[in-house]
Image 1 (cartoon, helix red, strand yellow):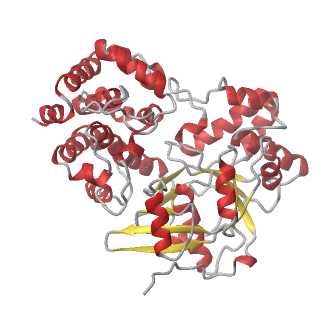
Image 2: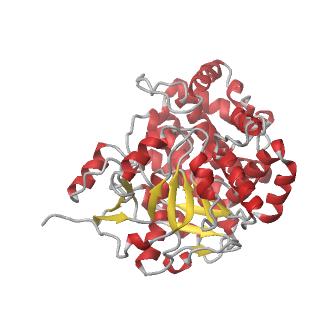
Image 3: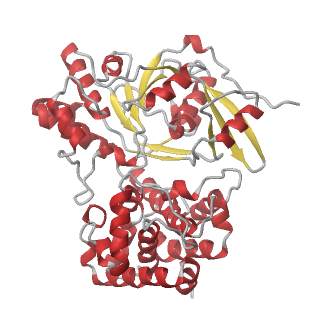
Length: 477
């Protein structure tokens, strides 16, 4: 019997928009959109449908693909016990993608829009890695400050819409970040108000006093879409060029700070909590940090998939030891959560063969991910006088990977927005390891820590001399 996809149980023609979401990538469509779809299936919240939006020219291709199928997203859950497929109908339109974001600003100015949410990637918030603060000198921000009526960034468009709402006497919407960042609401607030200060300081003050930016922790593994995923959709009778695959697990923890109202997402599994920071620290350090721990040894050993890396005894043992000795000891308590049980869950999720998530995806954008997912644990371990050999080896593995060849000599294709600069620095570090740590945009002042610098240099030299597998053995022994 042919497998079929579950369809929305509600009348989509009766939905009305309450949310504009910027950034219609795989994660949003497998996470926030699914929670809303669940709520709508209960017959509730039908005035909270999504208007999709994008601020980059490539977003137009996603718009074309989704509008061609009435803005339905195919979401396939990859449970080892059996795949399931659903058509998610929470989004009812995708706004035109325009250089000046005219249609996006107009939509966000509508009184019916009470939430503007974002998934614009961890690197999309213009953070100065050295200070951790908003960077007002970023070229895109400088450009938006000069032409605030024709903004190119998401934050410039949000700013223009808030200004229009204030002028019209319309209450402001809540801005909800759904990206994987520590204190993501605060980060988003800093980006919006930081940009406003450059062109309209008085508006910046009004936003700081009147606009809510709730912090949130989001979690669901969603691999990139390729031929395999499109074939999966076809097996359910769907010719969808942009299906989403994901693991069965999902989690969303949000501060309940929505002055303009919110959908009743607590009825479909979302946790509203005053302890978001504890949840996000646990997730970012154990899960995202764990991804970084297994990514680069797998990449250097030419292991394609994450579950295959987890099946390698050396990589698996490396993950266990670094997590146990250098990550988990510095994760604060989380309400109602057994940290050891959480780590066992993470290991099981990484090991799911159905996901077929790639090591290359985990290796991508280390220059943005290492400062957020690895270095906080390293700093805590150094401050506590604890071991740092494993985390120093993680940094050395990243450096070795950025030299752009595997252990066998195969070329690694560019895999970071700053790949060219990273490969040049990795080549210099082969002769002088400190050259890598002098990358202050990533490491800040850690180059000056003698214990970390010595461990990093020792492991990097060993990686070049003996290769990844022998180096992991040396660490584990």
